[in-house]
Length: 92
Image (spheres, rainbow, N blue to C red):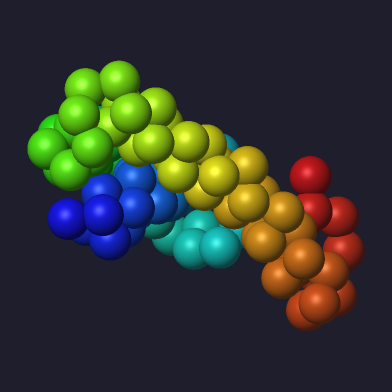
């Protein structure tokens, strides 16, 4: 159950990031931003439910949010690192 809510929270952060106008991981997915945001909200809800089932209410909510924030902070850095590695110039 723990791995499930961790994976769902990271997938939710990825969905929100791919719907962002600033992402360069998969630029063609920006056309589907609305669907990605809806999917990301659903994944965030499922991650929270799974975390609450595994850990209890407060620990579950904060654990799911912590993993979501880890993904939300790490994804732009990983994208910038990837762009610099490919030497595509400006990443911002």
